[in-house]
Image (cartoon, rainbow, N blue to C red; front, side, top):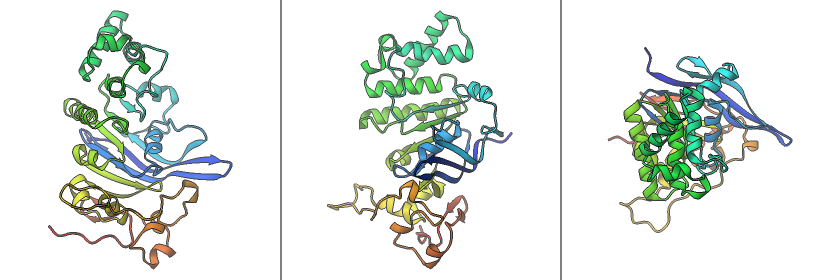
Length: 327
């Protein structure tokens, strides 16, 4: 049996506003296998979160998936009846949302919210549900789970709320976990703890994880593969070691060049000139064209290039990619 858990094919999600159509996700294709972590990286506004929401058909109004397929274990989630998809969410596919405090109901105790996922899918007796909820909180590293279960989200720290969110999302050992910026609002120590929790879940349950982040340090630490998004498109995709050692798209190269390094004595970090395009400003050309230092005539006269394989397992959408560094 194939170990492919998720296959997104040519997915497009647009927002229909009074100002015009915003192409938040524009023809994205990715694949994720069992037990692997695929990091989806890029600047704010690149379409990462919208892609994650599109997979579960949770795109807010006025957004709408307008094309493509989302195959989960071979079944297209975009054509699945709503009731069937609702049963799938939380049990086979789960999502950790970006803001851990906002992702929890502020007027319900945390323990009740953890129990809800068990009651919805397993229909456990009340006492058994409470016992399992405390077990889930304990498993995700929550200190004093009985006190936390009685508390409301606004009474807890961001790190504790994030652990609660991870507990809810992984309570039923889903096949696919979508984690949207799971460490962005946390301090460095708590970030490391949360990343360890995610890695343990992958090891223990073999779940496939789509990790949405802008933190390249996080990517280097936990990811197996990386897909770089810019302007609603995937512009480069490779395994994590290849991408960090040999970035071929000018945007990926510039993104990595802007990272601080412990082995370099520089007072100022190199910056990418210009600003990311607003979604409503995107044209049919390469979205990175206005900021690119390697643009050629073809970039200015042809539509955006497709993802092409430049070496085995390494795909780049660029007419004039960076040269490969020989090792």
